[in-house]
Length: 386
Image (tube, rainbow, N blue to C red; front, side, top):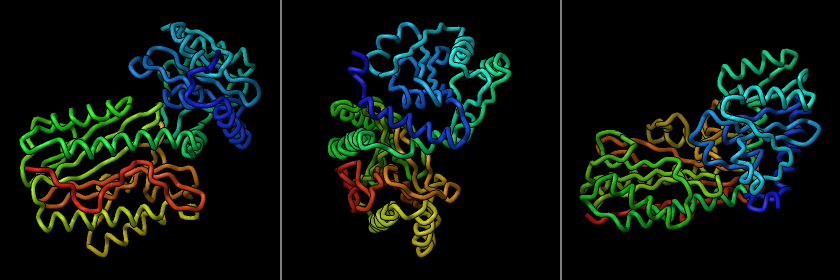
């Protein structure tokens, strides 16, 4: 049976197509040509392990404004496509003829003189090479290719209840694993050993793939990739990690202190946690991202601080651990129900080190933000026995 192992019900994809076609009507597009890996998975339901590691093979999704979608992929993916998608029209392609097959399919669908949306704009990239895209444009000289980035970003920014549940499980797997990691490690272990323990616990709880993993223990600088440095008494230790569950990511961070924390370290942590909770409270329908950023900046100004060491106070979470929109004034858009964010104003404190507590939150219709990464970051510093 087609779609027997799909991550979502058929109705979920039909809703995505309907929303996309509404945008297509507004922008006068006749079709979408999707080639980027995660956009392809979003529209097709096919999550290919080969696609992650191989840039030469074809993974293409075409959604006409009218008519059924078409999927282009390798012959050896056909059984996986049948098991995980509801797309009926699947066309095979080889290693070296990706552009040619796309041209053939677009002609077959009557789109050779139409307006086709592609992934050309902000925060987007195409899964075909520049030369391949030039070949497609040359062969379809009557076709107008237009940017579909705004449409794709808006579609993916609003998560369905099922998407939120996958993100919630991904977030809770990390939060639970970090809590246990801090209980299991001791002074003298290396950052790599800490990362290994975290990875072991994540796998034991059903985490699929780590999207990134930071272990930061030095007060001298911020080297995110775990090293052979040994954690010692007096260190602030930060774990920051993302994990996938059914293809959906998370971005969670926790901060601990090795040994008894100094009064200043405890005070900085407590204030930063208060700031994070206050900033998160603005993730409500009726606010804009700008409202959240300005409120957070005002609280920081009272302490003489400038937030956003990374240039933003957080970001969307979905198919990627970090995705649109960013919590920054440059993306001052309305906050809508169904959006999911990681919110984490963070600082590098002189003489102490970097501190970061990050949870994932879903925007609800009227009940305030809903925590998706349980247990929430504690209000007081976690203590690691020296």
